[in-house]
Length: 119
Image 1 (cartoon, rainbow, N blue to C red):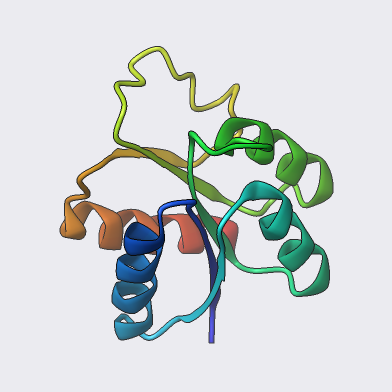
Image 2 (image 1 turned 135 degrees about the vertical axis):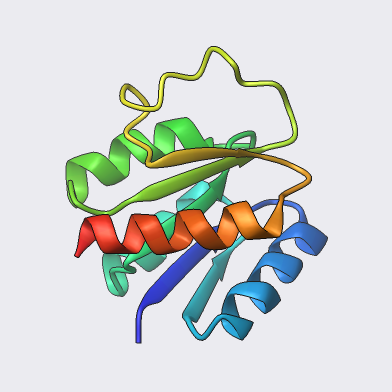
């Protein structure tokens, strides 16, 4: 079963995402910040990381750079409620950027595409 790590400092968002992704049939790990997310990645490499961009400490973009250095094939989907039109997905080493509030069908489609690309 494929493993997905969800990183978001907002408890309700993280819990909602975790519930939804589990309902899709994936094993889910959770972290409330980038540093805890990195610890999880080092112990139990997921197949996909879904992370908020704006978090204290290590933000989602910085996290995607670190992940790229550790596991270059590990896809990252970045989320934000802020306008990030200037975000260069290739430079941020992320698979996709999704705007909050999330469109659930977009999330499901991007999860599937990211996992297929990483396989």
